[in-house]
Length: 242
Image 1 (tube, rainbow, N blue to C red):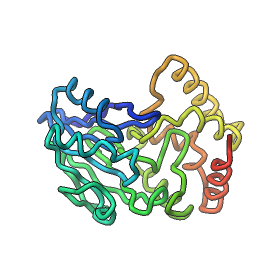
Image 2 (image 1 turned 90 degrees about the vertical axis):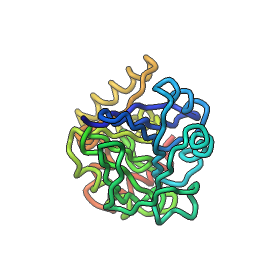
Image 3 (image 1 turned 120 degrees about the vertical axis):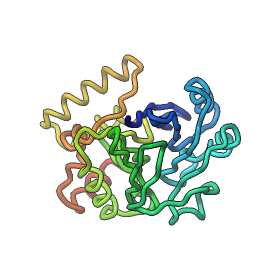
Image 4 (image 1 turned 135 degrees about the horizontal axis):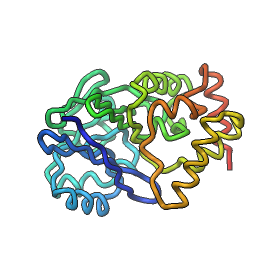
């Protein structure tokens, strides 16, 4: 039986993700930015958290680690290359290695760009991608530490995953991303349809994620950039978009 993923909203616009292995009941939590709402969600889901998976070191993704770990005794998993600036890790992983959540194994993918040590976790059995701040619905992460070439290759690696893969990203940015994306590809029918859907979802108070790899390949101008130069230009334009 596969894993399932459930979004937990926290802070102003972050998502942590609760991953559950259906065969064993093992629970993993990805990127706990704020402890109280996450602990409440974990308690409501059965009061278990076995693993905490970290995609990168930013405070809005790791701020709740200590409290969640103290409450549930979870082991913390993160990138070996970033161990010096992540919360204390119990399990260090490198790109290409795997991590087990119960009977389900996830693959670690190197996704630098937003930060140089950023990783993602792909669970093929369940079709779940935990991608932090690399890939967003209709967007990508700001290039805080890395460069456009890093991000281009990271997005290409994620776009190569199966089309039905669920994109479980770190923020609710889709509505603003859609407004910008329409300035890049105003005639893209998939984008026009997605933007309308997003507007309706947010008006109804619903989450706009997870999305899928197929949807991002059809409508996300960053994923659709044909080369590094184009990605750099689009990212620069987004940085100054209001």
